[in-house]
Length: 243
Image (cartoon, rainbow, N blue to C red; front, side):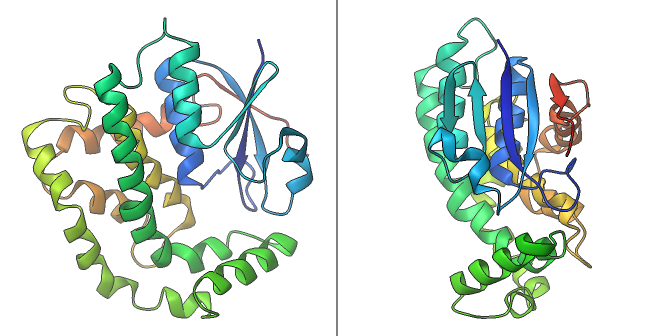
């Protein structure tokens, strides 16, 4: 069975930057499942329209099309029960649902305004124009550079929202306990923003925000997991020939 994963990229087709796409990469790597990655850009709606989707990640598994990182995670868990579990049981699945929302509403929503201007610089042509217009509208017409202008002063406030996570990681190595599970990947997916640069803050500081004090094992595991899930990185993903 051939699996294909559509992922959001910018000018570099080998650098997906969507946190949601990284969640799916990490889930596939955890399950030990191969997938052919297909670079997709904001203005290529026609490429995924046949699958009744307007967004990525989009996973094609044989004749099955699955959209949304959390739905994909549940699909992989239910379809491949013989592979390592993403949740560790129904309790873990329920907890992952909360962590997925926490990752969306606290982690990604907190980081995005700080990196939005950098993301625009990794786009060109119609994608650049689409991104600026749609995201500036999302911020009430404010230029992206103004949205991100005070990001350095906002970092400390953002870090404070993650204090419950830090307290957990002082008592255990991972959100999943002694080993990472999908709860970890919902948070680690924010590392997908690392290639955007983040100007003077540095991509590494994104993961520093997530780890802070405590969680040393989790922090040490992040680069390993990113390499595992990377295109051509030996984690079961096959690079699509870019056109």
